[in-house]
Length: 278
Image 1 (cartoon, rainbow, N blue to C red):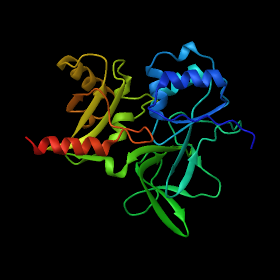
Image 2: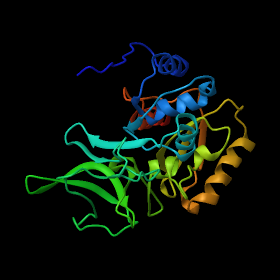
Image 3: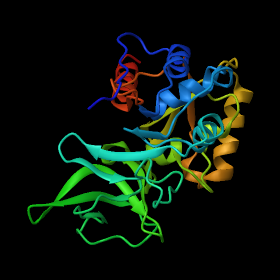
């Protein structure tokens, strides 16, 4: 179609990507939220110039600090493209469309001709602000996406994490993504701490509560009890008391899926293996 496409084979390197975007003047980019975060964290983006007209992300929610970095660096709001391998893209923020208002932190709205609902366990539509399962209507039946979500008063959809990433603690139901990546006033919780570069959250067994939250944190700051307490205190100010991470492990890196998302399944498997050896 007369368009130039850039492709790179090898381990992802944020500085190499920034250099390539600058050198070749790309106008359209789609990347995982993790890739945008790595561009932010490398601290070199302000050394380059860019020519973007469209920016999008897929695979996972994007935290607000990274969204602000994208706006400041590239001069554009990054647009969500949500879907699954089985159902395709069903919720979008229409990158490049001048007649669509991008709501930072949302998945956008349903593509034309597609019915998407947030439903409760009985299959009834959830009211705005209430988390349920994201469902897509196909061939006169509702198909589960296996993701949680909610809609807001303006009809925008918001991601609530994988249905299998739910943590149930002392009767409270929590989403790992909502703890790790919840936006209150469009701000990220754990990532609000200036020394937290990346984080992943899972539920771990607890004799009293059934499950409690454990956070795996990547940081250049040295691990310490004071650092742990700072993170816990920060989460307590933004989320409910039961949602703060009772356990925090500082790690050099997080396992990632091929799409660049935090691989919570691997974190759960590693945690289970560790518990089995003790």
